[in-house]
Image (tube, rainbow over all chains, first blue to last red; front, top):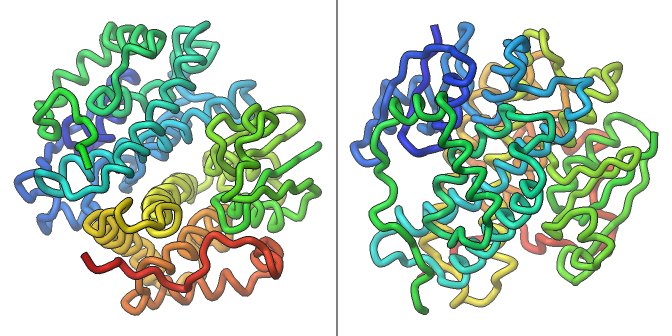
Length: 219
Length: 221
């Protein structure tokens, strides 16, 4: 029995999507960022820091989405979605997992400053601008990589791509994507996958964004 | 095997430097200045287009993500037993804590940017700084719980590569969060600081440091 504690459109979507790619069914427990369910005592017993994802699996609980991706692919190697030690793409695979989290940290910071600090946000425009520029730089690096391939790794789709299930759906709220045609085509390839579509069906409505685009406020 | 680490004192590359010392393997060290333009030179940008440390060259292959470096280095030297390979009963926890270190690192990076890189008051938001410090504090609560059973290191079986990742995070976090209510984590930091490899990875005297204060208070609005 696998249980995923989940918030729509958050990092836990990476896991929801990966589970669909692997054909693993899970019990989905949905939480909301607005109703206090993340701070409730019963969730605190599962996730001491009160964050998603939390995945109950194989008799224990694991929290960090990058670690969950690694663990699921290692323990189910026949599904071929990881690149395990000894694989020629091992380094590239680990690097993309790390890159995805580096990029996600910029998004998490933008989310916090634009969405959760009040309206109008008391965030510093200098910081918002800097973070958006940083995000654009990571997208530019991806755009270069995706110029000659369909997925992040040359050999084809892998669990590293599912790490983008949070990133690339949050990024367009902060950066205009027109400058990254290869990333846009990649997003379309992701959306065409059956497992991604099935995961979105389960995902539920996002509660983070109230606008289509969050510009840097004038100082 | 030829290994070269690109490093700036007190930056995240320190975790990898410390791990290399723990592994006791031969490597070359290239020290860069965190604040000047040396990370923006064409030679360095060819290694790491994000102009950040670390970068790790291993036999011509280049890595830029410190968490990935730690995992890979532990795999390359299995006899040093600093990883917990697939099949090990601690494997899941080892991976979770390796990535947890990244969560600490993200909050520390946001705080470092606000307190140190953006030194002028109008550039920063005390609301954000205060919120980041509170979130960091909360995240560290998980470490305090993990250490509550009296274990010396994050893994019950003993010291491992994740202690380099988590331990570095704790060191930086102490600049932004009070550890008075986290005695286990404070003792853990002291235990790590007593290790020879940890000391070998510390900046030399007179080095250019990122953190010049012991503690960074959130400024008053």
